Length: 469
Image (cartoon, rainbow, N blue to C red):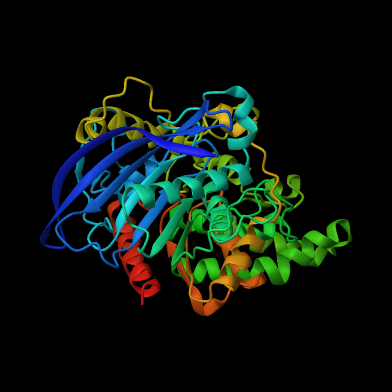
């Protein structure tokens, strides 16, 4: 496959980071993919920030993308990584109607690491040009190959082949991370002459979802995700309860040692045991016995956001339990994306700000719509992989005994949960001495809100410095 740079928008800027002025160049570039006959079949975009007031020798490069599939990089770009970010304040009390403001991002890693944001084929300004090529780009393995080839091309174009390399993905992007970490060394069984034998220094996983579209992990999801339900309940009903960390640990212990056996026993559960489980479930979730019995004791992240605070007149965001909206009279009409509070309240800010302020900041001259989320990509996606993503991550860590992995998870994320990530790390061959695990008092996007954004920034700095030793 041939790739050529076909458009480029360049600008030079500066910002104040940790008390010093940092000069950088920003390059927005279009890369066109050609088929074996030389016809253009797709485009992908990168937005790169490279510091210009220091030597690039030994300076790391982080390639970052979001998830979906079909999501652009706008949220991690304008929320976490870019030198400019949306001014969210504490996020929860922000007025999510335009006009919005942007500000210098004090938590960006640009002082120690250059940043390349990737919009894969089908999102942002990136486009699929030939429908018959859809299978090559709208699949987990094909997408990972695209990313590896794009990374190779960017490194050549910018003369950065000797840099320590990092990847960062959010949500579905964590699946992409695992596949890229494996395929950047060796594209096993793909029939492509792509044995790079490259190693990554580090992988950043935000909101891990490695079994999505795969065979699920062999643990009941009501148990696996229970601590996130408990955390979201705790947030809105803290009186008389221990700290968040202690409450979620207590919830996790209950889930595995008492709740799991109770669910397994089903109708065989004795009356006294059932009453005990009902009492404990009410303590951790706030749901009354009548509701819990209707649910057959099964409290799931797919239903709790709708019913957890319904009697108080609210529904919670599944993506971030900090956010709430008015309860629905008929929950059967609920649409997970359109009716979720994060989608309704936070996502428009990224679309407005990219298409207005950031487009001008980056001197982009493109009249196409910047697609923040392309549903056609998500609905067309082939999740089948030659090797399960978690096995790819194991393989990458095995082949590269110095590669580090950072897992970041929000307590109030009821999509990619804390309990899921804890189980993943504990149950697979992922060397614990090379893992950094961070929990945030946030939801799916830990950069929503100044306090958690600052912690994420500090954690990324620590991780990159640790992985580069």
